[in-house]
Length: 192
Image 1: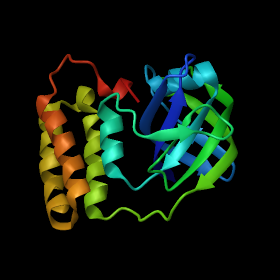
Image 2 (image 1 turned 90 degrees about the horizontal axis):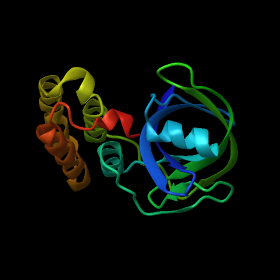
Image 3 (image 1 turned 180 degrees about the vertical axis):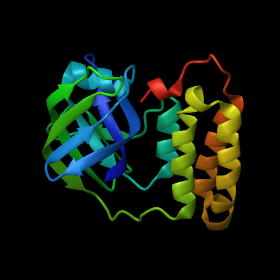
Image 4 (image 1 turned 120 degrees about the vertical axis):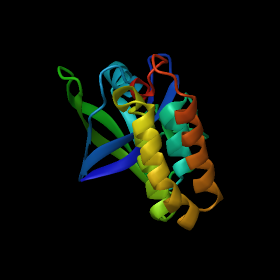
């Protein structure tokens, strides 16, 4: 089962990166599959450590996916990467194996520390819609804007019916990003 998280990493100079990423969690093992060219992939190759942040704040997912946004965070206990201030829980990990030979790397990490700040409220239909729209926005270079705009229009009623201010702001942020996207522009899919 793939879990939607925000993965925190740092580069060799300690510069943070926060990227939404689906991960597989099996006990004390984390499996990440970042694409070639992704900052997360480069950072994990360089430093070998990160934090998987579990949060129900969909605005963070949207901002971190398509911009170099660095949300409020604190240093991890056992790794240099950051724990989101908005994290419900987190797992700090160190890379134990990696296979970078494919378009998508296969990076396995061992959990070295974990924590919990509050209950995970879950995702209602609006939050799911924001997550789906965010994923679509990171695939613009593959599908084109028209396909993504059609899907966003299909998701809009879910946000209108069940969303609150945070979900509406996140959805509007993604819709604005997609509307402004120009083919040939830097690809957000390579950013996370």
